[in-house]
Image 1 (cartoon, rainbow, N blue to C red):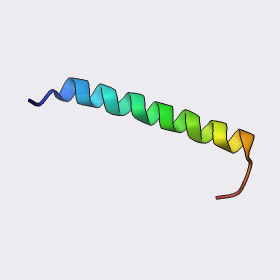
Image 2: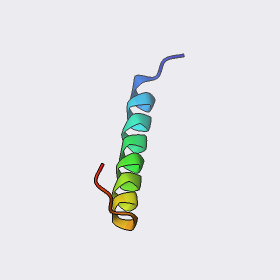
Image 3: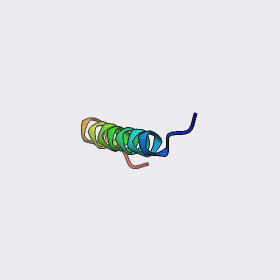
Image 4: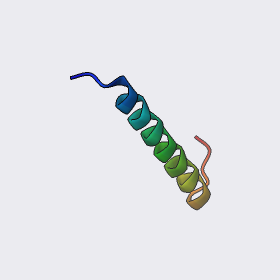
Length: 33
């Protein structure tokens, strides 16, 4: 039960979402991390 294509696509999607969330949080609450 190993589908590398699906896993890599899922990882790319989640990383993209996390990056957007991080950017959104920084814009809404600009605080130096």
